[in-house]
Image (cartoon, rainbow, N blue to C red; front, side, top):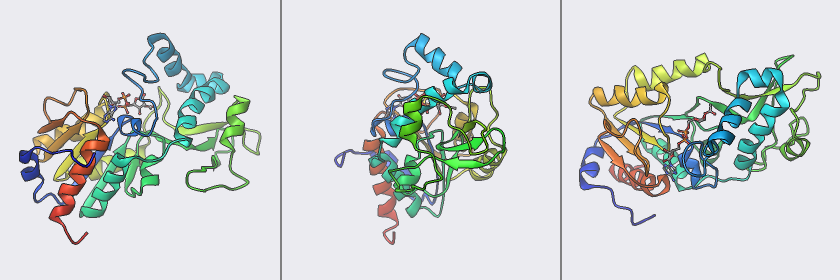
Length: 272
Ligand code: OAD
């Protein structure tokens, strides 16, 4: 990791960067052992199995057969609860400490950014550790042994996984995961923050890392920043939709490239 070299032209371009936006996807958590969605070894890799998972993680399956939705969700949450942040997550938290203005837009529901110390996070697809009752609307959480956030009124993930059924609220209603399922709208408050912090006045630097950039709300902040003359970087070993228009496509793992970028930004602001 430590010997990863950024191109000299990128070092120069990073000079004077004061505000930073970072957009992340499943690839940043791959080095923590969490499977990605698309591509080799991803949750949707096998086409038939993938389609079944997408079907299970949809709004209409939640309504018709919540146990099925939860079994698919437990795969994702079960991987998350066993994982710890990696050097990529840590580097993003360090960039936030260095920048005058910072925002992190993540599609991940694994909670690893907050565990690594990121603060201004827009988790646009929600959080796999949070649940909401479909009857009374009350929120609850799974115990999270990674943070030590354990309380008797919280849900025990291991027990729920072993039961293989939708967890239930004390009122008797079925809980739903606080994540955006297929066929559902994105939360309006998070869209408003995305506009305010990434689109209305794009940061000096916007980095996209570990995402296949399939969704317009992921591509758009990169496009807007690039057309406003801001610095754009993609970190992904594979090419994606956005590779052709970013200023720098770094074909490397997040855990290699992000610490080098964090170090370059910190060197300019030695007070941090
Ligand atoms: P994907 O699985 O679509 O893409 C992961 C990307 O990470 C791929 O482009 C990989 O090449 C790249 N990658 C893999 N390992 C990497 C590493 N070590 N460093 C950097 N990049 C790496 O995941 P997302 O783009 O996050 O939505 O998928 C977006 C959404 O699709 C997810 O949030 C999920 C899914 O349906 C919901 O659940 C609502």
